[in-house]
Amino acid sequence: MGILAFIDKVCVQTACYWGSPVEDGYGGYTYTTAIEIKCRWDDVSEKITNQKGNEIISNAQLLITQDLNEEGFLWLGALTSLTTAQKADPLKVEKAYPIQKLEKSPLFKSTNKFVRKVYL
Image 1 (spheres, helix red, strand yellow):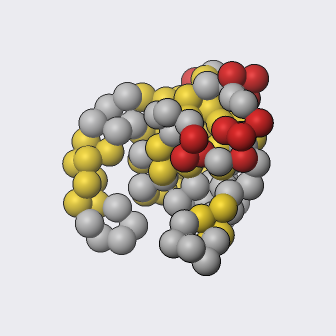
Image 2 (cartoon, rainbow, N blue to C red):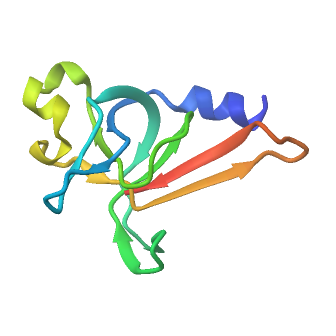
């Protein structure tokens, strides 16, 4: 079994993802409507250096099977558990966390297959 097959096999949890953050002109952001993704969500606290170079404490680490936007949000749970307002705005969802850091590493001898890890 290759690493990508392994990641597909262990990504059995459902998370909601809000991506494509766009500045709203008032100091905040708007996001795309939430979609469900498969992931492996580990509640692990770890000191990391985020994409802006600041040391922070990450609340969770995820293995994912697709590309996500930095500064998007993730929440562990299904879309059916969210209201219409929550589906449109991750800031209305308790325990929805911003993506603090993305890691995307190509597999050996590959230019189009990647291992992806997200820190919240």
